[in-house]
Length: 269
Image (cartoon, rainbow, N blue to C red):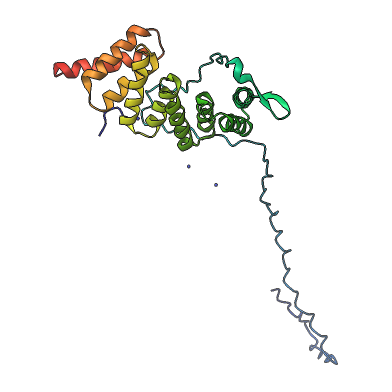
């Protein structure tokens, strides 16, 4: 077992006289018919409770479902999806236009960049338009299969939608095309960490640190993963390196607590 991993009847009498013998009462011809017994009052019927009609939500095809949060077995880790703003590289001027039967036309790479920028605008809106963004980035990679940044953006879209399988798929495609792309390695580590695949997450964070040795998020996350894997020496080195790089971080107190635990264990406390 890993250590890291926290209802609210009235009687009527006859009068008798004195002195005179009582006169005999004439017999009435027929006794009057007895009045019919009074019927018991029937209570009014109980009113039925008002019918509660089940409301059927109207379909809203344009509304995006809220993505489910990524499960995080190590809530101490900083699973920040990194989507660095970086300038688009200039295309080779010779690729800008191609000569077709009707004259010069835009190259596939040039049109792909237009779709990529369109998808980025959809993704960066206050309420991201994920369907439109995914469609735009898909057109970009269809026109230019080597467009690794478009695969990275597709992965971010699928993360926001909660489709973690396709998220990982597109990070991998991006890294096949550009093995040195740090944002995809970092996010791939977060994706594996969310699945509790600690060895794979550890490998991805190691790739980040091989490219950027002082990346604070990779240092912190990898340190916690090493702690969970019972690699105490590696965890201690990484967390101490994290504090040297970013001592005022919000995660610094957590790093210090883990360092204290690791040092106490090494002393046999």
